[in-house]
Length: 193
Image 1 (cartoon, rainbow, N blue to C red):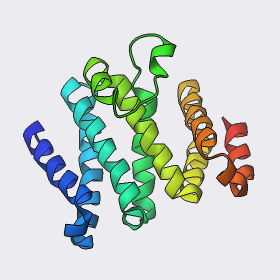
Image 2: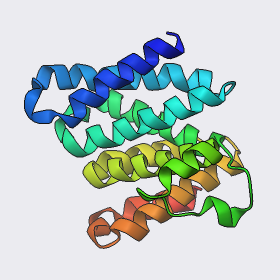
Image 3: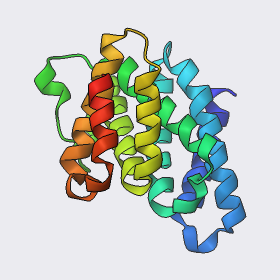
């Protein structure tokens, strides 16, 4: 796919996700698969192109929207695992420019578009984190089991371990009380990292 084709497919996916009442559930499922496919393609091309980083952050937002609206669309185990893997790698691979304080800016509706233009790596990292947390909220068991699987299969990559712990820290911060049934699993992940 070229950039124009990807943009057109993103627009179609955006429409199907945001106009739920008018879209057939079968089409919604196809769009969610399309978003995942586009995310894979765009992720591989985003390493070399700033434009593809912008497209990737839009795709991550679409994934987040899809997860919020269509809980059942991502019930497919492999599909959900693939999404989490892509998001973890995006969160780990992109290093925002500037100091650590700058990368901890809370993402909200007002500053998202400014950050997106001025620092696409920060935008991508924040959207990846937000989407991971969205998955964690809607599918806590699957989210934690995949994070645990990823932690167990880690090579000695200190950066990746730190990224997993960072995501887990944010997850606990936002959804702490509801995570009581998963304390053992969370402890195992922390010990592994």
